[in-house]
Image (cartoon, rainbow, N blue to C red; front, top):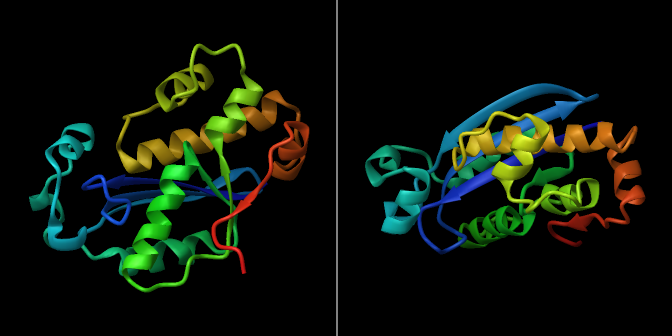
Length: 186
């Protein structure tokens, strides 16, 4: 079992405004790495509502590297592992938006959404938002901290695999009739 759980925070409503990234890399069911980065968004511009959500401010990122540098480091850790995210459409949208902004190729990686996995694994939950599912599986969470969100996402996937008696991500996907998606089709 191998994956890389990712979580982005953005500075504005624009998906190309990544200001933080958290990555948790898992191999053979064991966590290998975890790392968080601050990212200087375009123009280091922030919308006040985003600051309220995650607490990251322009002064926190004024000297931070831009997305291409951070994504290069992250991809060296991620390698060819599938990407896992809670509400993956958002995080994959950030990857696509930032890659487009910086004229970078989209990564050739499959991705899975732990919201969809949690809905299939624990349909009885009142909702499948990250704090609710994280609490259900006993994951610590400082919500909207990119590394904490990525770590909780990884724990959710591990818990779903155990709950479903699945020996691989592929088996879990097949069991729940989930389809993997490509971040960028060739």
